[in-house]
Amino acid sequence: MTEENVFFEENKKNLNFIEVFVEKDLAEGKNNGQVQTRFPPEPNGYLHIGHAKAICIDFGIAQKYGGICNLRFDDTNPTKEDTEYVDAILEDIRWLGFRWENVYYASDYFRQLWDFAVELIKADKAYIDEQSSEQIAQQKGTPTQAGMHSPFRNRPVEESLTLFQKMNSGEIPEGAMVLRAKIDMASPNMHFRDPIIYRVVHTPHHRTGADWKAYPMYDFAHGQSDYFEGVTHSICTLEFEVHRPLYDWFIDELKKIHPEDGAYRPRQFEFNRLSLTYTIMSKRKLLQLVKEGLVSGWDDPRMPTLCGLRRRGYTPASIHKFIDKIGYTKFDGIIDYALLEHSIREDLNAKAKRVSAVLDPVKLIITNYPKGKTEMMEAVNNPEDESTGTHEIAFTRELFIEREDFMEEAPKKYFRLTPGQEVRLKNAYIIRCTGFKKDEEENVIEIYAEYDPQTKSGMPESNRKVKGTLHWVSVEHSISAEVRLYDRLFLVENPGEGKDTDFRDQLNPESLKILSNCRLEKELADVVPFENFQFQRLGYFNVDPDSTKEKPVFNRTVSLKDSWSRIIKNEKE
Ligand code: ATP
Ligand code: MG
Image (tube, rainbow, N blue to C red; front, side, top):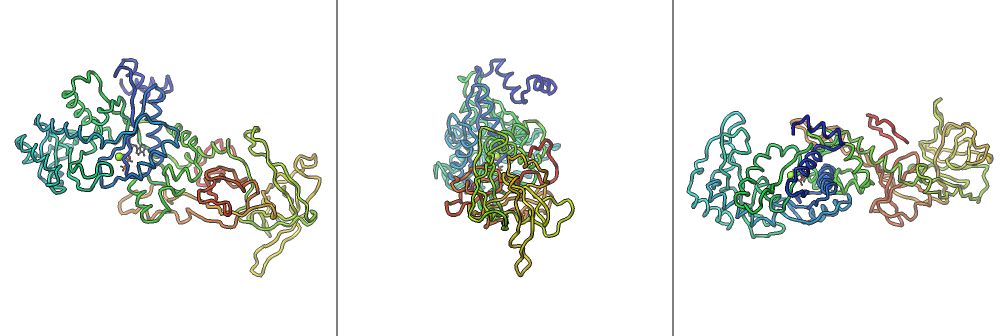
């Protein structure tokens, strides 16, 4: 199908281009009408939001077309891999709401891959090269200039077979020799210039231990694993587009050995990888942040990892919304971080319970309100969803309000509390500020006001116009808590971009602020980790797993509005 045709079909049915291809394959009865995909993470780090994009299409295609999706750990590099990562990956995929059919490991195929490599050697399509990787690289040529043949290229098959055995027995030191496919040193596709397909690694493997010393390279393991499993649509990111001819070459060779497989063959499809502003997506760099203690761990709420986003208060639904919005194309680009934030705001706006929390408390005394009196005020749980009902919040003579909601001398357009001015206390009364008290260091320590009993929310008089509405909690009926305010991890849109730029120098020093003296309404006394709330006027917050009954800890997931410039339209709050 031509690009134009694909585009046309896509628009017609509102399908992404991969779905268009799958529907075409199904219509043509390819692979007996089966759809099988896989998600192939390398267990060398935690999954991030970019992986979520791959997961959603791999599992999504299988779901949509009645097929299956398997999980395959691409564990061909023992020096970087670990079972800790395997477990985390399983948890994160489950959290996103997907269920795999089987869990496979590329290492399960080491024997089959080895046998295939032996077949290639026997067919004179692979040879052992004893040059160093530098020498091999020097002979590669350039895209416009053919490479040079290795002096080992035409060694006898028997010799290569013997040396291949030795590569695996431990007799050969790392780097001393490799197995290369014998294809075409003049190919315009650099990946065809006798690619290395096996190397020696002496580090024990996290699953196969010391059984193997010769390890297949990615290009040799990936397509073949697809083939052994029966994958029909092998979906990956655009950088693998140039590998596809090699992928197909190996499949062709495999099919020669397996005529019993009939017309079956896997095909690779590539989509644009996700890049986001103000963060990094390289596992190597994320690992560096963790190892150097620049964040608290893989699940630090500032990390773009799925466990970090979860701890930050992101919901699976918000991630799905985000992935739906960005879509799948053939063009690489960079997505504004604000779009991710928009997705969680949208989701929590619909779902999160509204509560009152004062992050930087200062005392407000309603001097004409009776001492010892408590009124239970009605607070709406979520104006977006009436079915969630209301809860009660205690109103008393002594309250806490935000320090920044009071000014001793205010400019004209200041609609919060200042001497002589009226404001409404949310769900309660209109009050007028009558004075304040300072300590020796000129800090305001108490603010005084009088309330108007006729203005209780819901009373006819309560329609009186005042410009500002403040949130508050009762001194006596509130609990104290720690609140962690997070901001973007990096100060620049494209961390690490440019020669001589170290991404670590571009970390945002203000990305975490800990407020340990916050006051929350009693409603929040029995929360459980990961619960989401809207703290009125402040943003969306969730309960951190560090939280205890004695000391609740909340994370700011996102503020109510985008404070980082580029504005997203139709913002509801
Ligand atoms: P590394 O950072 O170590 O190169 P990787 O990001 O490619 O690794 P893998 O574990 O190999 O991570 O990736 C598993 C799958 O997720 C692959 O199919 C890969 O194409 C996809 N993937 C990885 N990063 C992104 C991304 N930013 N956007 C979309 N898909 C991604
Ligand atoms: Mg990879």
